[in-house]
Length: 483
Image (cartoon, rainbow, N blue to C red; front, side, top):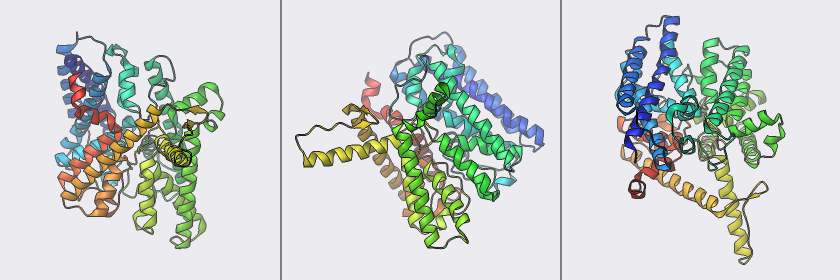
């Protein structure tokens, strides 16, 4: 294991991350909100630590293997989360404990969107901007950015990319060189953010709110600059814009790239995962609309459709924006939507959850086993579209599902051990492991009232969710350290 090379890379990446402290400081200067000093201090602290790690090891060179790639990704997310909490620790308004600051920083960076803060609209603009910006950077993965803009890393970037990019099919590169791949991903990401910002502004948001909410929409994060989230604007048009961009962001970004480069929208229609994703979204909206209508929760059909469409897409794509307190709906719906977050977005998107393609493959495998019961000697292959998948892919998906279920159970039991009630423990585990955000019970509005121990446990759950279980679990195997 090339530890000095790993320390060098981590130093470079932390120094690079320190630059993200500058925009909130500038926002503080523009709005004169008095919240800029913590960001300046955090910038100096981060760049100093980054250079201290980098400089003594600057001459270290060596091609990284998959093991080092996994270790760097895990270490970087953990280190980065703690450095992201530094300005929040320095803040006087609001005054946060270490557990609160770390929870908020990791929630932003992993695009979970769970918050310990209340009275959000009264916070300094710089703090509001920083929270949204954290989600934006976390959405695509700062390591993909780093590989694109730091070719001097001198490492086999594919190892980093494979450990970082969500989804079961890791080896399909959109362009031959990893740096080009990362750059193209970011071009699409930035373009979508710009389009979302302008759309929000045109629908009536101010520029500050439009930029902030575009950051968390494209990242499928869920942080807002208001306690009432999207409900603050009380605008069906803004809700529709949010839904459209959430669906776009929850689609595999390599599909976006293929559609843009070939200038052919049929690319989407040929993708089986995309079709399953749209079917799930449509089914959830119809179900929510039917239940809300039959229970007469809202005054008229238009409002019912608006709420059903927004909440169904927001929760199932793991964004977690809110226009109303969905926890107060008939209990069937909150539980259904929490379970839908386990599916999440498509592979290679900014969404959380297990990903649509994995759930679809589990379904196809279930159908195959049923067919084998009827015809034991027949040979059935699992096809994704027209492509037959090798059994090792299906086995890997089953392995992932087993690990996901095991981690879920352990985290939920740990939360119950802190004195949390059943519904709160279940929904908080689901919300953080799926990078969703809002839960039910005590965590329906915010996570400020739970114990510090529970916050640390849920912070670990967020990292497990963001790194898709295996990337983190592999570090706990003796084989990883022995090789």
